[in-house]
Image (cartoon, rainbow, N blue to C red; front, top):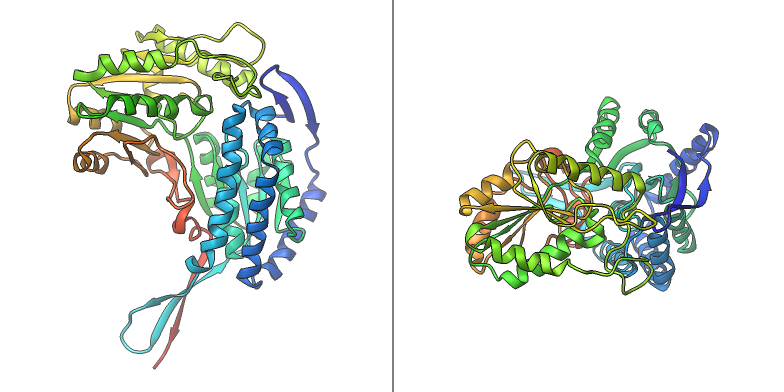
Length: 455
């Protein structure tokens, strides 16, 4: 796959980058390994200053960086600006809290003393996706930089300028060469890279196939890995919910980022007594929205990331309809230049249908009616994925009970699932393993070293 910027608004190739040679890759790894030797013993306050500076630079260049996101993957410009703000907050969060998170943890023991010390382990390889090209990188990079590790990034091949810009920001912030390194590599070279003993940990956010391949390479070489993969999140609306609030959050949760998010509200499950009312309000919210240039702040429907992504979601919808599902609204590509697909709602879905069992990574909502709470929970859990979910009810204790029965890594009550620096992020089942963000995110790639002192 070529490493290039292709503007999804008009399908034009903007810029192409060459993949680095084996010799250049070896030089970059050697530089990163050397940088680690001094970074791991650096004062944590200096690491914190670096992350604060990165956040400051990102905010000062927010519009420029947002336009780069929109150019490369088609996100609406307001959402791109929000991503940069979120990204800066992640760097600030670890700059502020890293030292406390990494403090020695005393252990109560009989006789003598003991504690756990968090020590860095080396170079961490980050394999990141295009849908949040700055923020996904920040979630892995910030906790590891503050912990004393160094990071090498293999970004998605369609956001090369975002990848390049992240390295430039670290350089501008004063990071020594090798603290953060961008690599222009094909995915097929990851398995070979995993064999290098200087690479000590690997993290991937992406598809099941990519995650399986990376996990195999990491496991074969006894490397710690973290995976954040696909999702088919259930958005449960109980009969006592605030319908207006639930509809508002469903639109945001499903169609934000043109539906291209792992934690998008892909399966909307509503108790049948209120389902028709909900569906009518949901449909009306996505009717007659302005389609157009994602750089235009008035645009509400921008392009998908690529023609390939559009064809994938188009085929999934067509196959599901052939299998007996119905289209409430949308269902086809928009007749204009660029990778545009209508906001879509599917109903009458049954087990075995394409949209029932597969992740829909685009602006398509699957709508289900459930007889009661138990049926809603069973339907929510009838998936191979387990990333996140949402429950809407005016009875908080009831909602918590439902959340407790959902087989997911995260559940949000009376709001659509969102990412925040202080909340752990990750899934279960085929949505991956490990956690990003919060105090848990800093513990993934450190040596939790026991130190025991005798009486």
